[in-house]
Image (cartoon, rainbow, N blue to C red; front, side, top):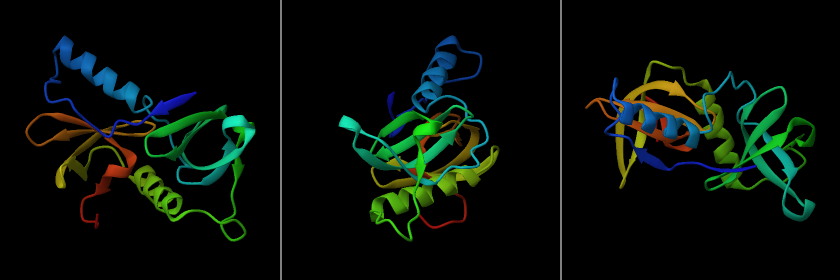
Length: 164
């Protein structure tokens, strides 16, 4: 199953107690893959079957007992059965710099905790801060200081106090 990551979805009108706000938050959760369970394996570099059966390299974002959500690049995430996922040893296998950076981003995201301050890419080159209030499989819902909510992909989030 192919899924796409939202780059930035401004959910400014999502307010507590509002049916329209709840609906927008549910859409944001769905675009980010739904609520996340513990992601102990987030950031692993793996190989999964691609188009025409050719293997492709990706980064684990989320894993359950049955499925693994693997980021394949840009905004593409594929859910794969666990038995079809093969771990990659970077000491013996060449991996692109982009995948190495995405792996690091995924590990950083997995280490973030709810109810902590984060920085995020607010678009147009701007960096903003907010409160990470819900982690999803591919990103998080972040409460802005003005009361709005942002749905932010895993590559666009940093703990406060770290470099971009």
